[in-house]
Image 1 (tube, rainbow, N blue to C red):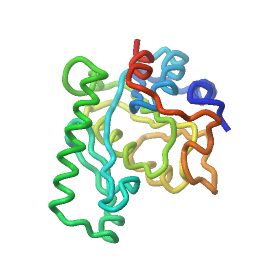
Image 2 (spheres, rainbow, N blue to C red):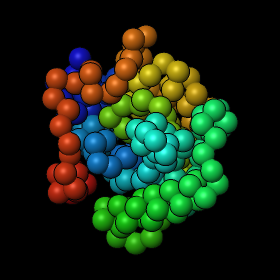
Image 3 (cartoon, helix red, strand yellow):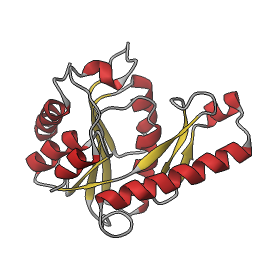
Image 4 (cartoon, rainbow, N blue to C red):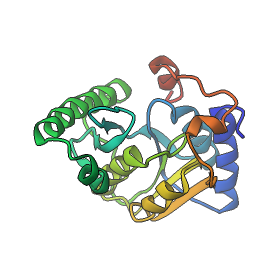
Length: 206
């Protein structure tokens, strides 16, 4: 159990130091990941920035992720879920377009200029406050990979064992402090897990 996101970031940073991890850039997934990513970046003496993606919710249940789309427009779909739920193509195109625009707008709020920072040849660590389905993390990791880094990792305080296993193919290394067998939601592993405002999140980038 983590006290809050900052506590989770401190503990994640300590674990990364124990691993001897060396990175050039830490990318938090706004908004909730920024309080986690800041202590990680500070401890590893790395630059901090953001990578943005938006979940593509199912028609009758927006919390169920059919996939995710990154701020550069690249999209990842959960093929197994698409086959089971069989949403129509018109819905998929509509939500992909809408959420891609939302992701671009969010990225613009957090960063001056288009796209990710220069990542070619660098060691890049993506940080989130937890992984439930892995949809957003997958879209973010694929966007980062396209930028040509030397190495890409993902670090989270807690995650679903199944999602973490699925993400192994998307990154060179996955670091998750906790992968509980009875995982239900990220928030159940935090004593305090309130919403992070844009203003708060931006402050962690200063």
